Length: 213
Image (cartoon, rainbow, N blue to C red; front, side, top):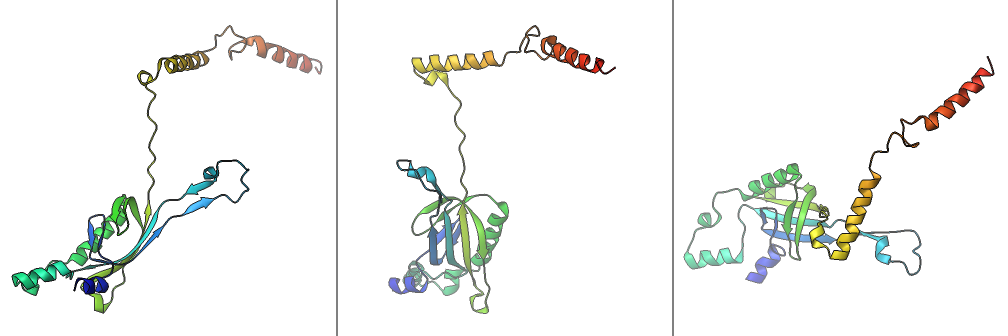
């Protein structure tokens, strides 16, 4: 009987954020790369010319108000529960739809659990939920999700974690940077306030104009 229910209700459930999927009819896992169209020099690092793209996932699934699962059916047969006691009166499909809308509007990443792997930092790229009279007590949806890559900032240099030789090199580089950023004295010919450069130019220009007077 378990095999029959697995055939009717797809490959099994999954999870999108906090949404429990009762049955998944199809999953499509996409791995894409951007490969350079230019010739690569012989001996060069090939991986430098292949850029991995964000992961993409498409799920076709069902969330029902009355999910039929083998374990639940067995409990009814063994405990003598009624159908109304088993299914209850909550609208799981409406709750799932509202949660999809909330996740879409929030634009915040969430985790997705599939039959192959667990995805992290995913967002909805597109969600389609067709409604038909025959599926009024469930939502059948097709969701396309894309990974958000989160870059991690590099740590601040901590001299205490370096070896003695590295500390000496780092200290010299920091000292050199401090020296280069010192203010140039006014007495220096390179100073903007110095007349060593501007005076000859201005005098030369004045002499030129004087010759036309």
